[in-house]
Length: 303
Image (cartoon, rainbow, N blue to C red; front, side, top):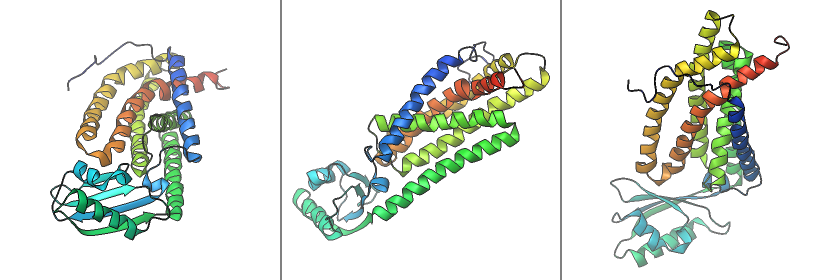
């Protein structure tokens, strides 16, 4: 397999761990800020969490999404419009005022199409609302999904290795989720169920990457019992660095293609995954393993 870097490097990752911790601290602060913005409702929320309407519109003749957006006018400029490929069916997701009924929304669409896309017409239309009760349920399930996944990661690593490795994996995964969430919210991207999906996917990817490094650390610790743990960990990171970069690059090529060619509906998902690949690769090198080293240096048994 083509390697971007040599199979065996000699970089002092563990010795520079405090630089990594400083950068990670900044990224986690962004994440906590994003959590605060989401909790207070000041972040940009998708229809799933902010409430709104999902509309399905079928036209007599297919048109480009931009043509439909222009025909609908200013009231639908902020809407997320997606066309079903090869058909004249469109999905429209948008926040709506509490007084806007389904009939009003559909009539606005019919009027806009009749005026801006004549002689086209709306053949069929339907509206589904995401109300306060559904919003609350989605928030609760999203939070529980993330919390339970992190706890399962801690338990899995603790059983497979030992508790200090579990803490390192948990800190790295929590760091990745917070970092990506913080960047997405601070840069003004919409927080939706697709972003939650990306965060859970990122948690699994980050764990997989971290386990590979931990496996090599465990092998080397058994074979080199008399050497300092920091040196063993640093050598293990260098031995797996080529594999880590190759795997991340393969994943990155895929999600970059999804970002540019997947359409606007999966734009937030693919962007979060791109950020997640970069942050997850960084954390498996500069966060997970150095946390294990710090834990070992500060433990009562070591002292």
